[in-house]
Amino acid sequence: MDPVFNSGDTAWMLISTALVILMTIPGLALFYGGLTRKENVLNTIFLSFVTFAVVSILWFIYGYDLAFGTSTWGFIGTLTNPFFGGVIESQVLSTFAPTIPKSLYAVYQMTFAAITVALISGAVVERMKFSAWLAFIPVWLTLVYLPVAHWMWGGGWLYQMGALDFAGGTVVHLNCGMAALALVFLLGARKKAKLLPHHLGYSVIGLGLLWFGWFGFNAGSALGANNLAISAMIVTNTSAAVGMLSWMLMDKLTTGKPTLLGALSGAVAGLAAITPAAGYVNFTAALIIGFFAGIIGYYAVSHLKPILGYDDALDVFGIHGVCGVIGTIGAGLFATTTINSAIKGGLFYGNPSQLGIQLLAIAVIGVYSFVMTLVIGKIIDKTIGLRVEEEHEVNGLDINLHEESGYRLS
Image 1: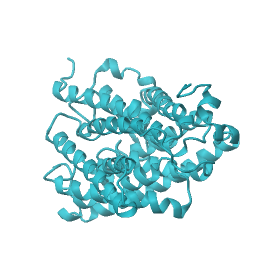
Image 2 (image 1 turned 180 degrees about the horizontal axis):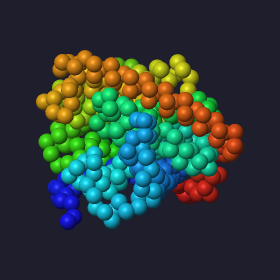
Image 3 (image 1 turned 90 degrees about the horizontal axis):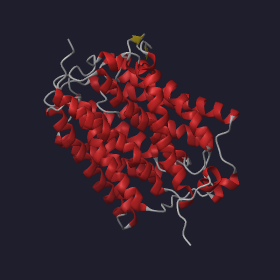
Image 4 (image 1 turned 60 degrees about the vertical axis):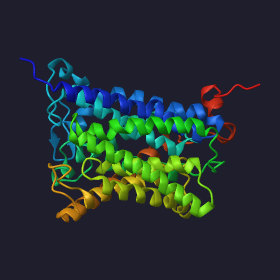
């Protein structure tokens, strides 16, 4: 007899999967593409699309098993179904989401892996070889993303300790942020390092798609059409809205004028920060998390980056990395059993040890991602090289790497 799926949960997770795909292509691609120089718009968009293609294939060849297979010493999953052999045909229920098919849970998780790698590209646009990026995708996915996903979500050692990450504050945002920081230290600054968005309209459309798709990201992580999904949707929208407004406030206080770019950045900061806490916290906590994401994210981009002297082109570390930490700590402070009965709560709800576990997860994943990315990047640099030729960088990557131009205006 075939297993009995919950049709409502299955339908919601199919929709959520499509929403997260929309976040990467075309959401992130357009968001990033509008922020670069016009000579690099196609290359920037291309990085997101090719990342999605490569991860989509590798995930089902071996990625899902290594992230969510039976744990080996709490570090990595066991490869039991290479090439996803027999999983679709067997129609078994998911161990991690017992009301939906395992195959659906697998493709949903694939979308998280794809956007995590694609997010890193925002730090290295306008100066990294396309060939180097193609080499980076499978190696980083295998050596960094898959172990970290297993530790937090797939039954690994941090999962066993009770670390909380509802939808990717550590696995996605901190992970990609630290990797981005490592790569930009290796690459060095661009020749034209000032951020000069050539078409904020693209970025507005991209942010709209990201915000829309994020409900699949966070509310979808409830893994069913239930009250938890509704709660996650509400707090996700709340944090994004507050993050936007608090970043606008900082713009106004600092420069005298709010900016659209700042508003977009603040919304992403609020979304990134609420991600790890979305299924654990209430509306008031979401207000607090979103507010501090906008403030601290602003300072990370406007003050920390100049102090440390790194050229993170589209502020992947300053927004995703830093705000992933804010939300992961927020979960340790504000998580409550009234929202999610499967947890013990956070510091303010009678479980102070949860904050310690969250800080441990942040430290371990942050260091692991940074160090491993440095090693991976260094090896690629020594073999095929990381950086484009200076002439190509100055004149633009679209025409020099792809023989294309985003605009053909007479």
